[in-house]
Structure formats: C-alpha cells, structure tokens
Length: 384
Image (cartoon, rainbow, N blue to C red; front, side, top):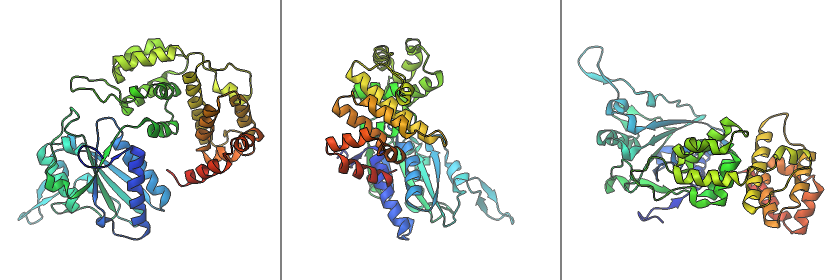
C-alpha cells in the first residue's frame, strides 16, 4: 500500500486488474455504467497513459469487441473544449451547445470506448470541474457518453514536483484508486515485445537504479524514467548499430540527464564487442561475452531478435536457427540459459519450434523443468 492508503501496482498489474474486471463485465452482459471510475496516480513518465493502450489490447484479446481509446490531455483543454460552444437554437429563443469532438463515439454493440482523461490533476480548476462531471455522471450538460464507454482518469501526485491540484476527499471517495510504480522486471517484458534497444535493456538490467530517478526535483529537466529511456532507445534504433556510442552523449543526456547518460555510455563502451545475434542463429562461429552483464545484454538481444523475426510473416525463425541458438547457449551458466529460454518461450510460436530441438528438450529433462515451461507456455497464451 502507498502512503495514501491505495494499492501500488505496476503498469502490467494495472492492465491485469482493470482488464479482468472489464472483460468479465462485458462477457457477463453487465452494464458498463455499473463500474466505478478508476483514477491512476503516479509520477511523470512511469507509463500511465501507455497502460490505456495496453488495456485496449487486453480487452480486444479477451472479448470479440473492437476497442477505441480517446486520449484527452486535459492540461491543454479549456472548459469550452469539454462543454462545447453555445449557439442560438433555430427559433433564437434558447442557447444550444455544439457537441465537442470527444463525444463523437461509436455506440454500436461491437465496440467498447475508453475515454482516458490524462493530466486531470494538472488541469485548471474549471476544466477539472467539467472532467469530474464526466467521471461521475458520464455527462457534461446535455452531452452524454454512450453506454459502451469506460472512463479512466490519470494524473500526477502533489508530491511529484509537477503541476497538480489536490483532489477533494468527497470526490476521491467516488472513484477507485491505483498508484502506478516503476518496476524494471515488469517493464522489461513489455520492452522486449516493443523493440526497445538491447543496449538500453542490458544496461538497465545491469543497474536497475538508473531505471527511474525517484529523487529528481522540480529544477531537473532531464532525468531517468521509463519514458525517457524509450527516447534513448528510439535514438539508438534510428541511428543504427554502427554509430559510435561515445558521440551520442549530448543526445542521450538530453533525455535522461548527465549522470545516467555517462553511466550508460561507459557501460556500452565495455560491451561494444558483443557478438552479432544473426551469427548465433545462423550457426556461424562467433565470440562469447566475457562478463555476466554483457551476457545478459546478449540474451536481451537474442530475445528481441527472435521477437522481431516472428512478427514478419515469411521470415519467422526456423527450427534449425533455434537449434543453433541452443547450441550456442549451452555454454551459458544455468541461470542465464534459463533466462534466455524463458524469454524465448514467451512467444508461443517459438516455444512450439523449440520443442522440436533435441538440445532444448534434453535441457528441460535434465533440470526437471518440462512441467514448469509447459505451464508458463499455457499461461502466456491467455496473457496480453
């Protein structure tokens, strides 16, 4: 529990909590208006808004519904943006309000709408008053949300050194509350599925303390968060593998700050000689990492390479390529080999092919892990 007496969750934990409730309501035919409005608290850059996108995927995967997310950044809104513009009616006797774009939602039965009200606690009080009416009454004035709409609020805490107004207790008691906390293990699983650069993953696995800078004060403009490390990953992916990492200090420090950037570049210099994962899967002779953190970075690279190959129809990994990877990994310490196989087996298509590799099946029998990996594989089939 947090200091505010609300549950602390990771982004994936939040998606699981809300996704389970929402899918059961949808499958059971319960009115979505019965569900309480969740409010997601958390520091900047921790992944609150990305959780709404992951929730969309979860609901679509577990129901037959199409999910449409309307992401509203309330800090940029005025009350008129929510209430609409007043115009005279045809008889010019009363004022009518033109419906704002956010109310333009598909109300058909095969669609679920999610209205995500982000930066709610940072919005001006007049905008907050209108937004709270949306969360509580599902309407503003004469404009009503459709019955197939879920409302989720999100914002920073007053302790986060950012613009935030305190939520009145009477209002808070009309919502359910979650506090999202940064967690590298949870984030790394998501990162491997979303093309986060292996060097970023490897460095943060080596030094979790650089994942999120919880001590950043209001005067620090660039500091480490999951979001700012994604910026670094995007820069590295765009510039390519041949770019001298030492030349990127300015670009990287502008995202995560000087201290984290220096630590990252120093770590990368020590691991510039990582083998090319394509050589590993193709069976060509290649070098072997000499340190444990370099080995972990290589494992992340191998898992990311496999994930990317499986996404391209007609270019999926073959059983032979996976057999080459298993032969190479036979030199790994037991716990690192387990880490590689667990990462690969999160992809059901890769697991099915790995089960055709004698070396992998022998490893499962040797360590009596067959049942554990089968359970993990079956569980992953129903995960996001």
